[in-house]
Image (cartoon, rainbow, N blue to C red; front, side):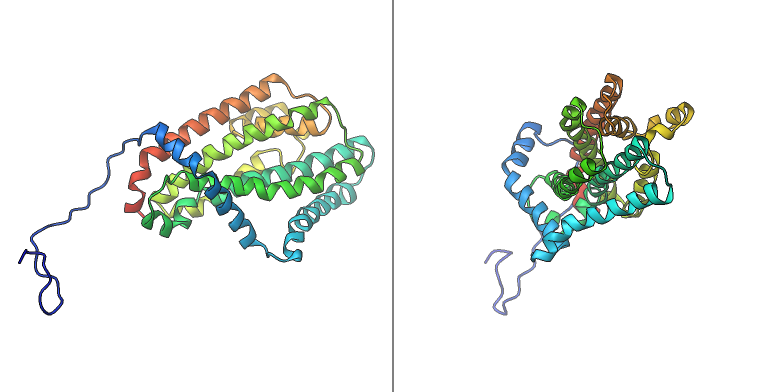
Amino acid sequence: MSAQAASPSGERAYSDVVQVFEPNALTFPPVGRYFADVLDRRAFIKELATAEVRGQRSTTFLGELWSLVDPLFQAAIYWFLFSVIRGGSGGRSSDFVTAIISSVFLFNFTRISLNDGGRAIVRNKGLVLNAIFPRGLLPVAEVYKGWRSTVPAFIVYIPIHLLLGGAITSAFLILPLIVVLLTLINLGLAFLFATATAYSKDVSQLLNYVLRILMFATPVVYPVSLLSPTIRSVLAWNPLFALFTAFQQIITGEVPSAGLLLQSALWGVVLLVSGVWVFLRHERSFGLYL
């Protein structure tokens, strides 16, 4: 009988085979095949994101209605703050309100992407440890979920923009580019923070503070037109600053400069490439730290 055969009592006999688990080398998987695998699982990405969105709400009519009521409630709060409490009337006040409400709605995309995408590996610990698949699809699914959650807000925003007399110009044709560039930035940040939280759970707590800093360092709850040139130069380090500046200009009827769009594009490419590089380099060792 071999050394690994079962004994009459049903217990496995002694074996001198030793299992040794060592950290994986920080090497890249075959990149082409990796991205092909992620693309092949796009249906899974969609279903995973959809399931999480539904899980946060209810599948009932009231639950679905909340996806529209929530952004409408946010819009009402900011309208009250800047139109009633702040006071004033006229086009300039209208520009303030539309710029802030739309920026809050757009930042919600980044908030969900970083908050959930940055915790994607930790939150799906069981899946990571018990299934073989490209882990990169987890942050991607969270960013997609962020976009899915943001769409209802902009459906609500369209009539608000019209009711407040917001400008409608050819600059709105640039909005799809703004969304693409923000998606690149969100993906890059999600990959970077997902890697960091996999190695250290404390980074998950740090994410809350990062999001608060980003929100106030980005023209979200204030119009960028209120900032002095000195403050604008200080906040230029923020990868979201140029993009939200361009976005607010579009909302108020201006055409953003090519410099703002180029700066946003550079941030998007740099963050996405860096995030993917760091994530793929460390992906094979995630299981050792979870």
